[in-house]
Length: 307
Image (tube, rainbow, N blue to C red; front, top):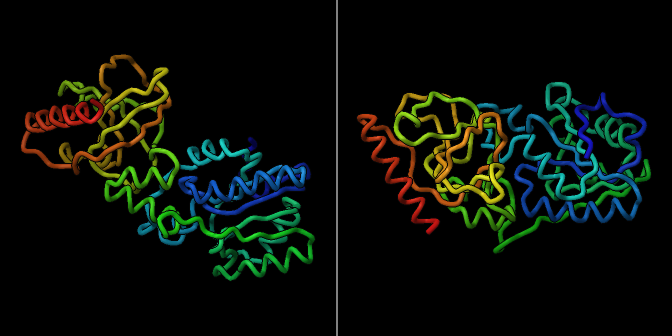
């Protein structure tokens, strides 16, 4: 799969494409529904499939302090899209220039001149361009003029409710991991490289793999039962903490994982953490001994979950 960063990196070879546009945060079942249709059409038209997405996501640009927590970082999103026969990802930097671009200019520069779109798939709530003035009907009119088809994919519903990133975020925040998994098509995951930490877990007798998740806000906060992929042939069971670690006056959001029956140096390795159950919220403790006792309880509960 080819990753194209920015309109300025589009070349003549990218002309002629089946395309879709969206945030694709989580690459959930609703997105997968669009991508499956999209892949069929790419084969039918005999041209590459291109996902157009944004970094940062538009709400993160317009309201950085109140934007909802991401389900995925860009890297994870691109890796997930690779599983659905996507040939190219065009990532547009969402900045002042893009936010103020009139919808007709977006159509001309990106869809017509940049990608030479022959077939375009968008969600049923898609708006674009300056002040979100561009609508599905504007795309249809542009398609008539520039000879490309536009299809509005209707929302996928489960249990009578729309599948969306917002709905998944709500389920995760409530600790409803089975419900979130049903909407995602797989357990909710976070990934990253194992980094050096402050070694406090080792001092307490529970050495942890520390992963900087590179996001201001996360849909998860607390202590969780997890499985970790990327270390052995089979996923390794464990217990994880995600948050700012108030017990030790932490400030940066970090993911820490204590792996059961595992004692290897894994600094620098890229791992994937699947969240299965919430055990408790983050807490303050009067002493490190109290924290150590609580971690022992967390480990016992997590092992009981797997047993």
